[in-house]
Image 1 (tube, rainbow, N blue to C red):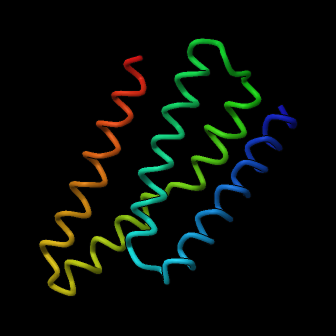
Image 2: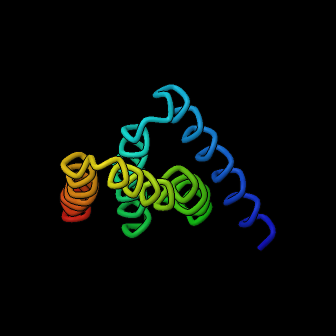
Image 3: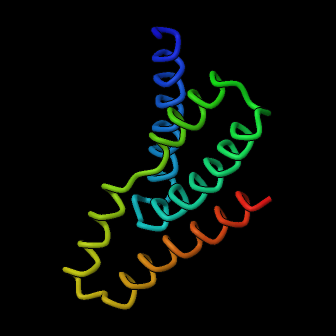
Length: 115
């Protein structure tokens, strides 16, 4: 159990660091959150698929799927940035941001999990 917690913590540390790097590289622009959320969803779908077909160990699932992807993707920042776009009266941008985040992620995840 302690080993599993450590795996999740290490994965979470790495995921949060990459998320932080992307945010800073893109000057904390909402596109960084979009990239992290969509790419994190894709990675999570791949890892989940491999785990479900027993091609990945539980330890790798915990480190990458739960830890890394859990910390790398961020719903709270997504929500906050959407509200900021709405408050700035950038309604079209906010709509594109929300719709594209969900649609792109769900379609790609659906494709990956259907194989």
